[in-house]
Length: 285
Image 1 (cartoon, rainbow, N blue to C red):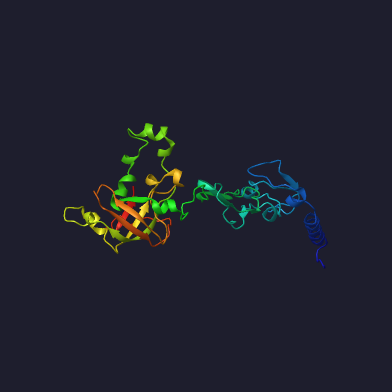
Image 2: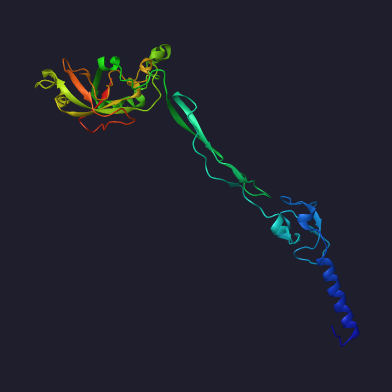
Protein backbone atom coordinates (compact mmCIF):
# COMPACT_ATOMS: atom_id res chain seq x y z
CA UNK A 1 0.00 0.00 0.00
CA UNK A 2 1.34 3.48 -0.89
CA UNK A 3 0.14 6.57 1.02
CA UNK A 4 0.75 10.11 -0.06
CA UNK A 5 0.16 11.42 3.43
CA UNK A 6 1.87 9.63 6.30
CA UNK A 7 -0.87 10.15 8.88
CA UNK A 8 -3.64 8.99 6.56
CA UNK A 9 -1.75 5.86 5.71
CA UNK A 10 -1.29 5.01 9.37
CA UNK A 11 -5.03 5.50 10.07
CA UNK A 12 -6.07 3.25 7.19
CA UNK A 13 -3.65 0.52 8.23
CA UNK A 14 -4.89 0.76 11.83
CA UNK A 15 -8.56 0.46 10.79
CA UNK A 16 -7.90 -2.53 8.57
CA UNK A 17 -5.99 -4.17 11.39
CA UNK A 18 -8.84 -3.64 13.87
CA UNK A 19 -11.41 -5.05 11.44
CA UNK A 20 -9.19 -8.04 10.85
CA UNK A 21 -8.82 -8.61 14.56
CA UNK A 22 -12.56 -8.43 15.29
CA UNK A 23 -13.45 -10.62 12.33
CA UNK A 24 -11.15 -13.31 13.66
CA UNK A 25 -12.59 -13.18 17.19
CA UNK A 26 -14.07 -16.58 18.04
CA UNK A 27 -17.51 -16.73 19.61
CA UNK A 28 -21.11 -16.30 18.55
CA UNK A 29 -24.15 -18.43 19.37
CA UNK A 30 -22.56 -21.66 18.12
CA UNK A 31 -19.43 -21.50 20.27
CA UNK A 32 -21.37 -20.26 23.30
CA UNK A 33 -24.10 -22.90 22.81
CA UNK A 34 -26.76 -20.25 23.40
CA UNK A 35 -30.18 -19.83 21.86
CA UNK A 36 -32.86 -18.23 24.02
CA UNK A 37 -36.55 -17.53 23.52
CA UNK A 38 -38.11 -14.13 24.18
CA UNK A 39 -36.03 -11.28 25.58
CA UNK A 40 -33.06 -12.38 27.70
CA UNK A 41 -30.15 -9.99 28.31
CA UNK A 42 -28.16 -12.79 29.90
CA UNK A 43 -28.19 -14.71 26.63
CA UNK A 44 -24.94 -13.00 25.65
CA UNK A 45 -21.95 -14.34 23.77
CA UNK A 46 -18.55 -13.10 22.65
CA UNK A 47 -18.27 -11.96 19.07
CA UNK A 48 -19.29 -9.26 16.59
CA UNK A 49 -22.88 -8.22 16.15
CA UNK A 50 -24.90 -8.06 12.97
CA UNK A 51 -25.15 -4.27 13.21
CA UNK A 52 -21.68 -3.70 14.65
CA UNK A 53 -18.78 -5.80 13.35
CA UNK A 54 -16.42 -4.13 15.83
CA UNK A 55 -18.49 -5.12 18.89
CA UNK A 56 -16.98 -7.63 21.28
CA UNK A 57 -20.32 -8.97 22.58
CA UNK A 58 -23.52 -10.09 20.85
CA UNK A 59 -26.84 -11.68 21.80
CA UNK A 60 -28.63 -14.94 20.97
CA UNK A 61 -32.16 -14.28 22.24
CA UNK A 62 -35.17 -13.74 19.98
CA UNK A 63 -35.38 -10.03 20.83
CA UNK A 64 -31.99 -9.42 19.23
CA UNK A 65 -33.66 -9.61 15.82
CA UNK A 66 -35.68 -6.49 16.64
CA UNK A 67 -32.74 -4.63 18.14
CA UNK A 68 -30.17 -5.81 15.64
CA UNK A 69 -27.53 -6.88 18.15
CA UNK A 70 -27.62 -10.61 17.29
CA UNK A 71 -24.46 -12.56 16.82
CA UNK A 72 -23.53 -12.97 13.16
CA UNK A 73 -24.33 -16.68 13.21
CA UNK A 74 -27.74 -16.25 14.88
CA UNK A 75 -29.76 -16.96 11.70
CA UNK A 76 -27.88 -20.19 11.05
CA UNK A 77 -27.72 -21.44 14.65
CA UNK A 78 -30.82 -20.12 16.44
CA UNK A 79 -33.41 -19.83 13.70
CA UNK A 80 -36.74 -21.36 14.76
CA UNK A 81 -37.33 -24.84 13.39
CA UNK A 82 -40.74 -26.51 13.40
CA UNK A 83 -41.22 -30.13 14.34
CA UNK A 84 -41.04 -32.56 11.45
CA UNK A 85 -42.87 -35.90 11.42
CA UNK A 86 -42.64 -38.97 9.20
CA UNK A 87 -45.32 -40.88 7.31
CA UNK A 88 -48.24 -42.58 9.08
CA UNK A 89 -47.72 -46.24 9.94
CA UNK A 90 -50.39 -48.84 9.14
CA UNK A 91 -53.42 -49.11 11.45
CA UNK A 92 -53.07 -51.56 14.32
CA UNK A 93 -55.44 -54.48 14.76
CA UNK A 94 -58.66 -53.88 16.64
CA UNK A 95 -58.07 -54.14 20.39
CA UNK A 96 -61.11 -56.37 20.86
CA UNK A 97 -61.94 -59.62 19.11
CA UNK A 98 -65.70 -59.34 19.53
CA UNK A 99 -67.64 -56.08 19.58
CA UNK A 100 -66.66 -52.44 19.41
CA UNK A 101 -63.10 -51.41 20.18
CA UNK A 102 -60.32 -49.10 19.06
CA UNK A 103 -57.38 -49.21 16.72
CA UNK A 104 -54.59 -46.71 16.27
CA UNK A 105 -51.73 -45.64 14.06
CA UNK A 106 -48.63 -43.56 14.76
CA UNK A 107 -45.98 -41.56 12.98
CA UNK A 108 -42.47 -40.92 14.25
CA UNK A 109 -40.84 -37.56 14.96
CA UNK A 110 -38.07 -36.88 12.45
CA UNK A 111 -36.90 -33.60 14.01
CA UNK A 112 -37.95 -32.00 17.29
CA UNK A 113 -38.99 -28.35 17.40
CA UNK A 114 -36.09 -25.98 18.14
CA UNK A 115 -35.75 -22.40 19.26
CA UNK A 116 -39.44 -21.57 19.53
CA UNK A 117 -40.61 -23.54 16.50
CA UNK A 118 -43.98 -25.32 16.40
CA UNK A 119 -44.10 -28.35 18.67
CA UNK A 120 -44.86 -31.84 17.42
CA UNK A 121 -48.60 -32.65 17.32
CA UNK A 122 -50.85 -35.33 15.87
CA UNK A 123 -48.38 -38.18 16.20
CA UNK A 124 -51.15 -40.66 17.02
CA UNK A 125 -54.66 -41.23 15.65
CA UNK A 126 -57.37 -43.42 17.18
CA UNK A 127 -60.56 -44.65 15.53
CA UNK A 128 -63.32 -47.11 16.40
CA UNK A 129 -63.38 -50.61 14.99
CA UNK A 130 -65.38 -53.80 15.36
CA UNK A 131 -64.06 -57.25 16.24
CA UNK A 132 -65.74 -60.06 14.31
CA UNK A 133 -64.24 -63.08 16.04
CA UNK A 134 -67.11 -63.73 18.42
CA UNK A 135 -67.88 -66.88 20.34
CA UNK A 136 -70.92 -67.37 18.12
CA UNK A 137 -69.90 -66.51 14.54
CA UNK A 138 -72.49 -64.74 12.44
CA UNK A 139 -72.10 -67.07 9.47
CA UNK A 140 -71.92 -70.67 10.66
CA UNK A 141 -74.03 -72.35 7.94
CA UNK A 142 -75.40 -74.65 10.63
CA UNK A 143 -78.67 -76.49 10.84
CA UNK A 144 -79.94 -74.07 13.45
CA UNK A 145 -79.92 -71.14 11.04
CA UNK A 146 -81.59 -73.16 8.27
CA UNK A 147 -84.39 -74.16 10.63
CA UNK A 148 -85.02 -70.65 11.90
CA UNK A 149 -87.79 -68.46 10.49
CA UNK A 150 -87.04 -64.84 9.67
CA UNK A 151 -89.77 -62.35 10.56
CA UNK A 152 -89.80 -59.39 8.19
CA UNK A 153 -91.53 -56.05 7.63
CA UNK A 154 -90.91 -53.35 4.97
CA UNK A 155 -87.60 -51.48 5.35
CA UNK A 156 -89.42 -48.15 5.47
CA UNK A 157 -90.40 -48.96 9.07
CA UNK A 158 -86.73 -49.22 10.00
CA UNK A 159 -86.33 -45.44 9.89
CA UNK A 160 -88.51 -45.18 12.99
CA UNK A 161 -86.04 -47.29 14.96
CA UNK A 162 -83.34 -44.67 14.32
CA UNK A 163 -85.54 -41.89 15.66
CA UNK A 164 -84.66 -40.65 19.16
CA UNK A 165 -88.30 -41.12 20.17
CA UNK A 166 -87.85 -44.88 19.75
CA UNK A 167 -84.90 -45.04 22.16
CA UNK A 168 -85.88 -47.81 24.63
CA UNK A 169 -83.44 -46.46 27.20
CA UNK A 170 -85.40 -43.22 27.45
CA UNK A 171 -89.02 -44.27 27.67
CA UNK A 172 -91.10 -46.57 29.90
CA UNK A 173 -89.18 -49.63 28.69
CA UNK A 174 -85.85 -48.49 30.12
CA UNK A 175 -86.19 -50.52 33.35
CA UNK A 176 -86.66 -53.70 31.35
CA UNK A 177 -83.74 -52.93 29.06
CA UNK A 178 -81.43 -52.17 31.98
CA UNK A 179 -82.58 -55.15 34.00
CA UNK A 180 -82.38 -57.84 31.33
CA UNK A 181 -79.06 -57.95 29.55
CA UNK A 182 -80.64 -59.93 26.72
CA UNK A 183 -82.53 -56.76 25.81
CA UNK A 184 -79.39 -54.69 25.37
CA UNK A 185 -79.13 -53.09 21.95
CA UNK A 186 -76.20 -54.52 20.01
CA UNK A 187 -73.62 -51.85 19.26
CA UNK A 188 -72.51 -52.84 15.75
CA UNK A 189 -73.38 -51.88 12.16
CA UNK A 190 -76.36 -53.21 10.24
CA UNK A 191 -75.82 -55.93 7.66
CA UNK A 192 -77.95 -57.23 4.82
CA UNK A 193 -78.30 -59.93 2.13
CA UNK A 194 -80.41 -60.59 -0.95
CA UNK A 195 -82.93 -63.42 -1.14
CA UNK A 196 -85.02 -65.02 -3.85
CA UNK A 197 -88.54 -65.99 -2.81
CA UNK A 198 -89.02 -69.64 -3.77
CA UNK A 199 -92.46 -70.14 -2.32
CA UNK A 200 -95.18 -68.10 -0.57
CA UNK A 201 -98.71 -68.75 0.66
CA UNK A 202 -101.87 -67.53 -1.06
CA UNK A 203 -102.55 -65.23 1.92
CA UNK A 204 -99.63 -63.04 0.82
CA UNK A 205 -101.32 -62.22 -2.52
CA UNK A 206 -105.07 -62.23 -1.99
CA UNK A 207 -107.00 -59.01 -2.52
CA UNK A 208 -107.50 -58.14 1.13
CA UNK A 209 -103.84 -58.72 2.06
CA UNK A 210 -101.42 -55.90 2.81
CA UNK A 211 -99.89 -54.12 -0.18
CA UNK A 212 -96.32 -54.94 0.82
CA UNK A 213 -96.92 -58.67 1.19
CA UNK A 214 -97.88 -58.88 -2.50
CA UNK A 215 -94.19 -58.32 -3.28
CA UNK A 216 -93.41 -61.71 -1.76
CA UNK A 217 -94.20 -63.74 -4.86
CA UNK A 218 -92.21 -66.65 -6.18
CA UNK A 219 -89.11 -65.46 -8.01
CA UNK A 220 -89.06 -62.03 -6.32
CA UNK A 221 -85.58 -60.71 -5.51
CA UNK A 222 -85.63 -58.87 -2.18
CA UNK A 223 -83.11 -57.16 0.10
CA UNK A 224 -83.39 -57.91 3.82
CA UNK A 225 -81.50 -55.92 6.46
CA UNK A 226 -80.59 -56.91 10.00
CA UNK A 227 -80.50 -53.82 12.22
CA UNK A 228 -78.94 -53.66 15.73
CA UNK A 229 -82.37 -53.45 17.39
CA UNK A 230 -83.27 -56.88 15.98
CA UNK A 231 -79.95 -58.58 16.76
CA UNK A 232 -79.70 -61.21 19.49
CA UNK A 233 -76.53 -61.41 21.56
CA UNK A 234 -77.06 -65.10 22.37
CA UNK A 235 -77.05 -65.83 18.63
CA UNK A 236 -73.72 -64.11 18.09
CA UNK A 237 -75.10 -60.63 17.47
CA UNK A 238 -77.27 -61.53 14.51
CA UNK A 239 -80.96 -61.61 13.59
CA UNK A 240 -83.11 -64.71 13.96
CA UNK A 241 -83.63 -66.48 10.63
CA UNK A 242 -81.12 -64.36 8.72
CA UNK A 243 -80.53 -67.21 6.28
CA UNK A 244 -77.67 -69.37 5.05
CA UNK A 245 -75.93 -68.59 1.77
CA UNK A 246 -77.16 -70.79 -1.08
CA UNK A 247 -79.66 -72.66 1.07
CA UNK A 248 -83.40 -72.48 1.47
CA UNK A 249 -84.96 -71.35 4.74
CA UNK A 250 -88.27 -69.89 5.90
CA UNK A 251 -89.70 -66.40 6.34
CA UNK A 252 -92.95 -64.96 7.67
CA UNK A 253 -94.49 -61.55 7.08
CA UNK A 254 -94.78 -59.93 10.49
CA UNK A 255 -98.32 -58.63 11.31
CA UNK A 256 -99.66 -60.21 8.09
CA UNK A 257 -101.81 -63.19 9.06
CA UNK A 258 -100.86 -66.49 7.39
CA UNK A 259 -98.41 -64.87 4.96
CA UNK A 260 -95.23 -66.93 5.02
CA UNK A 261 -93.05 -68.93 2.70
CA UNK A 262 -89.51 -69.94 1.77
CA UNK A 263 -86.55 -68.11 0.26
CA UNK A 264 -83.02 -68.85 -0.87
CA UNK A 265 -80.15 -66.59 0.17
CA UNK A 266 -78.42 -65.37 -3.03
CA UNK A 267 -75.70 -63.11 -1.59
CA UNK A 268 -73.57 -63.47 1.52
CA UNK A 269 -74.08 -61.21 4.52
CA UNK A 270 -72.18 -57.93 4.31
CA UNK A 271 -72.20 -54.62 6.13
CA UNK A 272 -74.86 -52.74 4.21
CA UNK A 273 -78.38 -51.35 4.39
CA UNK A 274 -81.42 -51.82 2.17
CA UNK A 275 -82.96 -48.88 0.33
CA UNK A 276 -85.95 -47.75 2.40
CA UNK A 277 -87.54 -46.23 -0.72
CA UNK A 278 -87.54 -49.56 -2.53
CA UNK A 279 -90.68 -51.68 -2.13
CA UNK A 280 -88.55 -54.83 -2.33
CA UNK A 281 -86.54 -53.92 0.77
CA UNK A 282 -87.30 -55.42 4.18
CA UNK A 283 -85.90 -55.64 7.71
CA UNK A 284 -85.89 -58.38 10.32
CA UNK A 285 -87.90 -57.92 13.50
